[in-house]
Image (cartoon, rainbow, N blue to C red; front, side):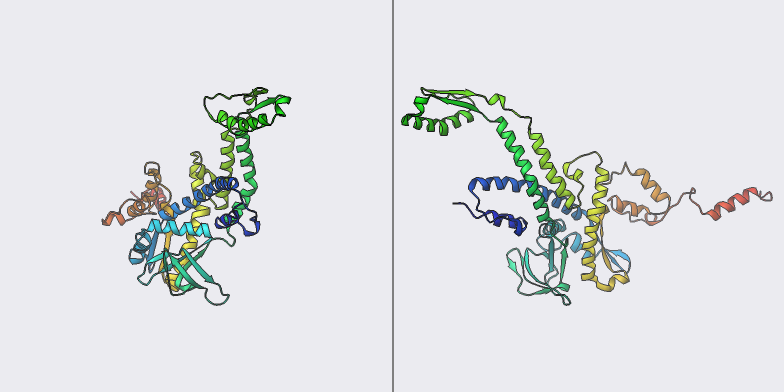
Amino acid sequence: MGLNFKRWLLQKLGGDQAQVSNEDVTAAEMFGLSAEIHVRELAFWQCTNMIANAVSKCEFKTFQNGKEIKGDEYYRWNVEPNKNQNSSVFLQKMISKLFSENAVLVVEASDGQLLVADSYSRKEYALLEDVFTQVTVGDFVFKRSFTQSDVLFIPLHSRNMRPLVNGLYETYKKLIEYGMKSYTKSRGMKGVLSIDTMAAGDPKAKEIFESIKNEGFKRFADAENAVLPMWKGMDYTDIGSKTYSNEGTRDIRAMIDDVSDFTARAFGVPPALLSGDVQGVSDALDQFLTFCIDPLCDMLSEEINRKLYGKSVLNGDYLQIDTKCVKHVDLLSVSTAIDKLISSGAFCINDIRVLVGEPLIEEEWAYKHFITKNYSTVQDLLAALNQQMDPNTG
């Protein structure tokens, strides 16, 4: 009897209900399904973890009256959002929920802790605030209901991308299966068993044949060194060495890499970052920040500002997610750029130290802006030229 398991499992993994078959699945098919799930889950969580790691590196800056401050709100988002998680673990869970379920709900406990909901029930309204009930965090269920203004609710896309990626994989997995079968078939042992006509009609010979076919050949094929006993009237010829094909494990891996590539494109992650290619990684990282991390952080900061600050953002009270911390800075490679930024007067020394992740220098000169004599206004330049051309000037 088959197990009616496939439908439930694929739906749990984000499969489109309309595309999932109601057919039972045998034990052999279930093991094959496990291998397929590993491929798609690896690609999905590679992308999700990369995005979550990038967001967890960002600094959540808080401002009051347009000036940056570090108070309770800064501490909550950058150090300890709740008693059981630091900020990195909290953001990892939040982003993982966001991509795996296409939305994430963050609630604030009575003591100010921020918690990512594991499950909830949402009642949507057109003109009134949505209501969230049965909000569960771990094994704790909130008895109260939450309105939209009480929570941070962040939907990712208008349509969940995960079923779309899984649907694309369903069409592509046949190629991977064919490659694996071809490789296994070409490396397997093959032969021809000739049976004498008189022996084939003997009932005892038939029993012996079944025993050899089911047990003897399997042990003979699996063993490193073995002897296959043959009965009178039987002749075995090995032809396995002639069936090797050009299909290799590298070809199969290339097809699996294709799964990672189209999964990465679905989430806005450059495929080069997933594959670990060193060549062009700087351009790929810039693309990753521009088209994936920056829009995501904008969406998060907008939700935080409208719920926690409201219209106070017009007075300069707001939270900003700084994504410049995502990219590693090599001081030796950017030393020339640092010199230009300081000598042009655009940034002070402490501004640069913040950019490169170094502690501030609490000295007055570190907050001053410097400019070299190479930079001057057009008026100053014309005045200097006129002074040189005036014969009355000494």
